[in-house]
Length: 338
Image 1 (tube, one colour):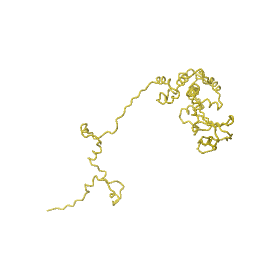
Image 2 (tube, rainbow, N blue to C red):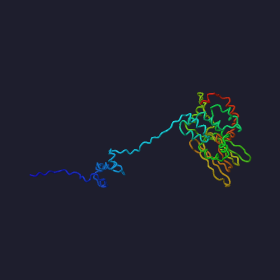
Image 3 (cartoon, rainbow, N blue to C red):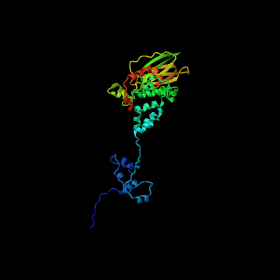
């Protein structure tokens, strides 16, 4: 006697492993936003094909042995470094040129520590000191004993002693007036020179919080310990510049009751096509333009940095007063050991 048994139809195995088509979604009676389950089933053969590295010889794999997992990360490169004693870097610093001080300080932390020491700046001054060169009393060896402000004093003295710096004062490299953009306006004045007028704007850059000039300025304001007397980075004129504009006509510069910044400076040709025209745009701390000063025609435009001798001539700070102030300040023989 034969029995008839009804078997529930199952899915065809031919559908396993195939890619889903648009008909699985567009013509489906049931909405589904996820891929078909059959597309997520991968056979063991496909797994072995994916893990097998392309371009490798199967004989080499069989000889080395199959681990089932290939390490695709490259081997770590072991770099060796030499940690030299700081005394060695002090010996090397004796042969560093003034224009290479920044490069030397960026080598490592120990070279940066060398540059921040009074011994480095004292040695740099002694390497280029020449008795035959006439210098103000502030830059004589008797006034270079104290640590306070030693760095700025050495830099300023090099513009009398070091020939490349002396030549730089006569070059036109200090006429890039676009460097004053973003600086704060401190004071302004004008003076008569022969048949023209020269307008001077004293500007200062803002220091980033935590930077070396900002920490030095904070140390000088607090004066909580004797550490401020040994601060070699002390410099009241750090980051200051003077923008000098020489024109033919007298122009009245208004007085401003708020803190202003140089938003932009534009140099174009004058109407006569023979000289230049300077437009100096001033803005407040929010960046809103407050005023625009126009100088037309302009004979000369120059920028004086704080390390040039002409800078202190313009602000009226004689070096004799600085020398007398240096002699009256506290000094200690232990400064040479730092």
